[in-house]
Image 1 (cartoon, rainbow, N blue to C red):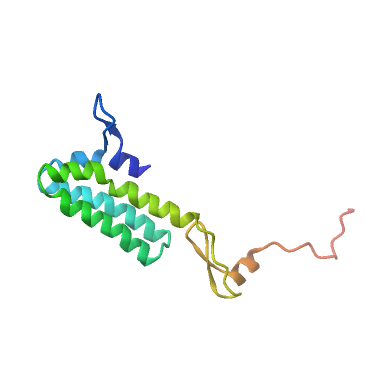
Image 2: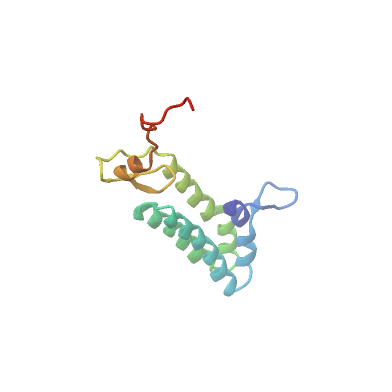
Length: 140
């Protein structure tokens, strides 16, 4: 999973402190912070493709912006990045959202899916299989 790679892929030997590729990128002054934030924004892009609500995307964006802003501070920002783990927080928010049951909507209205898609009730009905017509007999 990307959040694990970005935030907790490695362990500091002799401790339980975990860090990821993003923390390593942030050690490079200037460009490292920008590249790490771009990686975090990729998770938001994927979340938007799943059709998550804008409010949830905004919460996820605040996590990325906070990590990026504080992460720009030398040394203290790097420690904050290791402890805050914006990507893991965002994945947790996304999982929580996807676990919520879909809300039923009246026929013909969009209906949310636990997988993040949106389907119209008549389109689901059109794609369902119908029973074979009585003109066909099973004994041939």
